[in-house]
Image 1 (tube, rainbow, N blue to C red):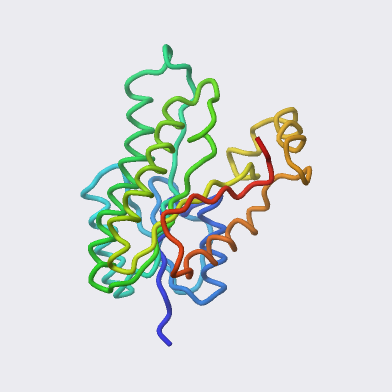
Image 2: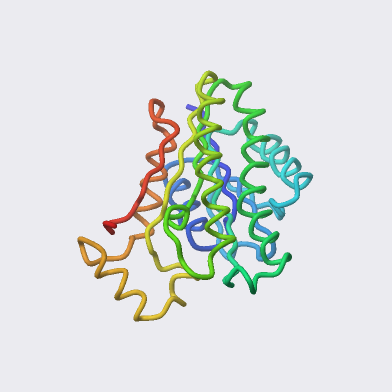
Length: 233
């Protein structure tokens, strides 16, 4: 059987790196993109491409390169994300636009170009990495929260439009986990997260990657938002 191919944005570190490892161990081809820092690791049957997803032309080149390398796209994971922490009255235009262009515009561009290929195949899955910040208000996260909320709406609309072609579109909300952002949160915040968890734990990033791997192959679920966490509001 021909190996499946997954496209992963933001592949250099954190969730992207863990996803590359999980999918590769399960026999998938990996095509990932990064903006600045190239990955410091390798996995079998992979191609890493420098691309800024906030720029539509670079997204089109990334998708084209993926098709040239692996001939098809079975799954797309929109993982790349940036954050600018500032209150609304202190947030500059540049800070706002950087977050919206990368998180929301970039996700839209990837979905649009990937769907062109998946519609030809009449098959495929798209998984968007969103955030609980789409539903909860935190001081200093206006741009990030707005972008992630937009991704939720984009996920549901794309699911309706792509469903007739046999393509699934879902979103996952990762819980608090120890990636580059997480380790800088501070002990007090980490303890607060644990207290809100019914299991008194933070999210295991390997379990998160394996859940996304499972979701990539599910054919009868679409338009859903999965909160991968153990905190109860």
